[in-house]
Amino acid sequence: MALTWHDIIGDLKETDYYKNALNAYDADVQAGIACYPPRKEIFNAFKLTAFEDLKVVIIGQDPYHQMGQAMGLSFSVKPGIKVPPSLQNIYKELQSDIPGFVIPQHGCLTSWATQGVLLLNAILSVQDSKPLSHAKRGWEVFTDEVISRINQHSSNVVYLLWGAKAKAKCMSVDRNNNLILESAHPSPLSAYNGFFGCRHFSQANAYLLSHGKTPINWQLPLTMDTQG
Image (cartoon, rainbow, N blue to C red; front, top):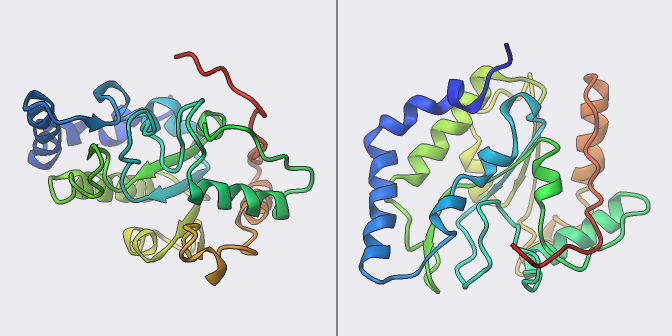
């Protein structure tokens, strides 16, 4: 039988750092502090990407911190929400790198997730309007261990590491049995320092094909229903 996330990381739910992170989130909410994403969406990256389908890992930092943005997937926002600057730059690189790619009118990346792209933030929650407010509460230790377990139980995975923090997060990944692609972060502050022109998306697909895996269809639906 194929391994599931429960097999790979289920025991982490019993760790102090996992419990501390969730308890801190709950305590903030009970104190009247808005936190994102909604609790039921914190683990969307794992819900939408089955472990047996895992092909690509994209590391973000912490969730978007304005109401309605965060949805439990790194770089992704819900339909109807303005596309953030970093994702706009990701779309520009895709348009340059993938023939025929058309920039969609939304920022929802669920179609990537369901194809096997794990959109994982290092920190899985945040307070309203306060970036990194849930840092050092346990999430980073949890996601470090997630990456370690992926490295132990899978191979021929593509890691797209944008920016110094993402690179540092995946230092222990076996480079002989996976493809590590690194560049500057797609933020407007750094995209011109090496993100634009990195061609990570076509390189990822070439690698997947060379290892007998179906490539990712990077083209997103051009429009999405804003309901739900």
